[in-house]
Image (cartoon, rainbow, N blue to C red; front, side, top):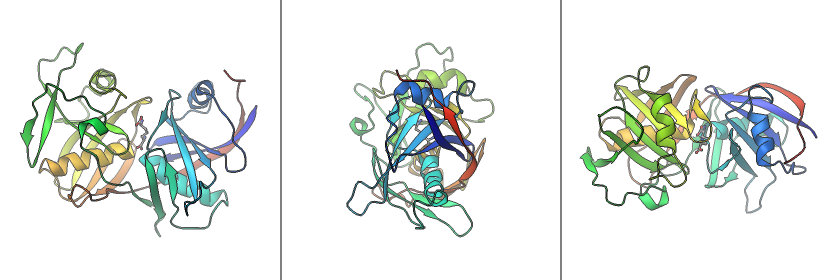
Length: 292
Ligand SMILES: N[C@@H](CCC[C@H](N)C(=O)O)C(=O)O
């Protein structure tokens, strides 16, 4: 089957965008994996399939697949690319587009400077809703909140790991590190991602404080490995930093692929606002192997 796609990136987190507004492509897990493959396919961290309106005043629906082919609930950088994609494809002329995702309805908004702002909704802290199995763990107080101890089997360091566990529609474990350049992201990232206390696996964030208004961040993403930026990961890190009393309500997040700005007022039900770039790289067609 030959399909048309658009390659996009947001702060270096890259996407294959598929227009399924006229007809579903019906791709299998193996075909998503093929598209994401950097040697045999197009290459991407995630694949976003844009589908028609599900009604109720919502403009579109989209589904997100990680590079490993698994479907996921939410994607911050993808949400910004989505709004640029539907406008460039002539699917809408709106500046604010309502889209249904697996974790709820979000509203990306085009800004006059070309960046996109997304209301990512309120963070979720209840362990069962992340989901995070906190049974038998005693959290340590930190700022107005807490951090959870996490034992990492298979990691040699004797230093205990303390994390913030929260959901931005998808699960995140955020830890503070002295220096993101020397943090063991590639070594411990897979151990955290697959930790048995996270039954749906987790995105592992490594946050370095620069000031109360700036952090550096690396994220080892569930189902994709380390990416150049993770939008929901940036939201999760800033929320954790604010609740820990370390950050102000507006924070610039420096990732290896670019800068995002995250704002959160601090009330538990307040939405997290994310602003950042979204860029089209190229559009083309590709033959994809028949299913499995
Ligand atoms: N890159 C994304 C997050 C994509 C999904 C994530 N890997 C997960 O499995 O939850 C972002 O920008 O938020």
